[in-house]
Length: 531
Ligand SMILES: Cc1ncc(C[n+]2csc(CCOP(=O)(O)OP(=O)(O)O)c2C)c(N)n1
Image (cartoon, rainbow, N blue to C red; front, side, top):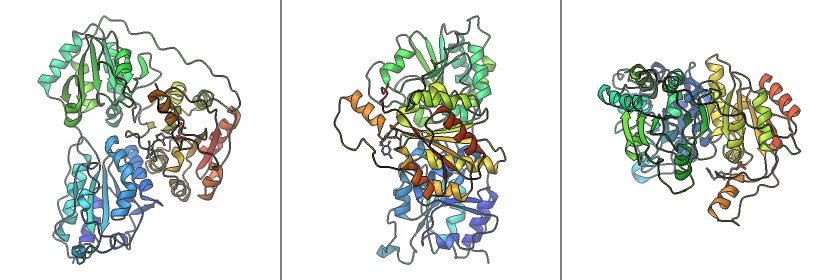
């Protein structure tokens, strides 16, 4: 007779989720025992890494991924990156072990007494099945919830004695839509406003890349002949950044953002929140006389926006539909933005010199994973992303996503056969939040290159202190840390690179290697301005 476990594996197989990211504990062992031969367990040494590896893998494969966590403490460890997965809109099916139902009443060790509440509010659905026989159907519902727009993580708490119970007949394997088209009447209104606009601007968000919408965005931008901005603090790149209409990334503060859009009468925001702000710089949300049109697949995001009129729809479908409705314009295209000045290669290198070097050697099909807070602007100045699905960072602002996400992305590049080179730029502070992901990358023999700008400080927090006039706080310096020794201890190759030539050699060698390479790059300690 089939067990709950047999039926659950059958369902996961049918849904294409045969990779399990996780860290095992006694509450998970009845699920994991005798893992079927067609399943693969990606072993992370801590749950934060398991969640972000699965996130990177899901984003790069454009499919839901499965993470298996240890009951309450494991869920707690994974929580920071679950917050990030929520903001990333990544479809993750998170299962967590739970103590045996036979003892839950008396709350034994490792019981999670309010398990379904624990990951809230950073999951779309959270549940502990009422009966063991409901586990497979709950997995089906979890999957359907995770992948439908707006996609995101879901959580199931699964008591360890459920797996060997006799199963009900298997649930139907169902398919669900992962995108939806906009309301045609409202779409025509939006097209009419854009067609009558004197000077429109297009602001694109990560949903464009998630929807594989670069071509549609370029066609729409060229039809409108307007400047194109990336929405602030984007977690994905959204447009070819060498395109003459591309203006860069909008600032993440209210007043400065509105200033940057000065003069436009219509601002079309496609696939982004309105807007992702960070430091509070008061001001008007929009420049005088501007009207905002917001396209999103998330009613919550539409409701939260402080200004603008919204239209619900998938970013790519909506861009394509708007293109079809818009007549050609007589406006001339804006002039291209100038190239950044070439920085001097001093010693130690400035962040600008480091990233100008990286931009110069960047492989055409390279994938960049970024978690380098104070250096972000310098990186984006010199390394222009030109292809879809090739720039990833966390949408939440929480550290500890980038390094494990890069491992998941590199694994996806191998599994899909695309084999694109993956390079992560991870600050020497950020490096430590999920550092154990390096061990998984080494075990999987992934040719991931991790560049670590070493400034021995939390520079962005110093920039914040200067901006907010809160100087003198503790804990902003990072002396006495040996990135090379740590990376070597997890089984990675290492090479310190202090000059452009050394960086070029380390990247070329690392991308050719059969294991990850960690490259500390000493850089200057100057603290860039926050805005
Ligand atoms: C989980 C988490 N803890 C703490 C912070 C606060 N924080 C933001 S940036 C930062 C410093 C990052 O340092 P590093 O990676 O060296 O980059 P730098 O600012 O020096 O460029 C810290 C601690 C955070 N964002 N997330």
